[in-house]
Image (cartoon, rainbow, N blue to C red; front, side, top):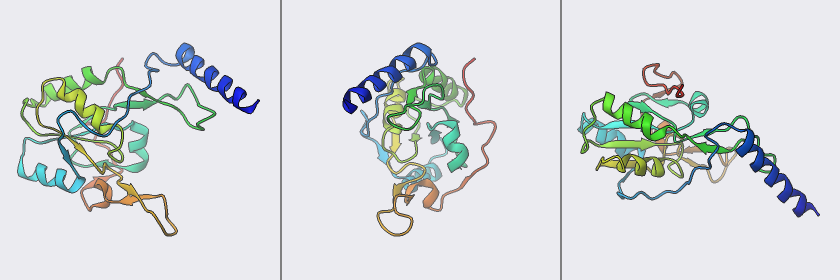
Length: 196
């Protein structure tokens, strides 16, 4: 009986999401490996940026996530790969679903063009932990014709502590935990704005 209720509830949540949610209520595919197979950790990304002034750092996290966890100071572009669907709370998962930003490709292309990024310039894509958003976003950028698109494998926050009082906290590696420049202040020139 409980399983049937959960299935019914999940179906109701999905139907509400599709019917009453925002137009972008499409689940985003998540994966870790990229079509180009180019990866750096946060420290290597910083090193690449120091060695090549044409390197571009892109953050693909939801704006609210950035608000509470911080922002890499040298970020050049901020366009979310997915956004929290604040109109469709998922009771079973106990959270808001993440849905694909339907304007990602258009917004990303406009930002890359505005910066004059060449097709062979290094482009570094970062999400929270390098798990599920930087890779598909990097693939979308590669599909635009860019040939040197890297996914940051440990992301902004890095991995979780495996023991101790803070077990589960993202405090291993990542941009923020590697002593790289970051802040809670977000550059207004870089901050993402939703399409109107």
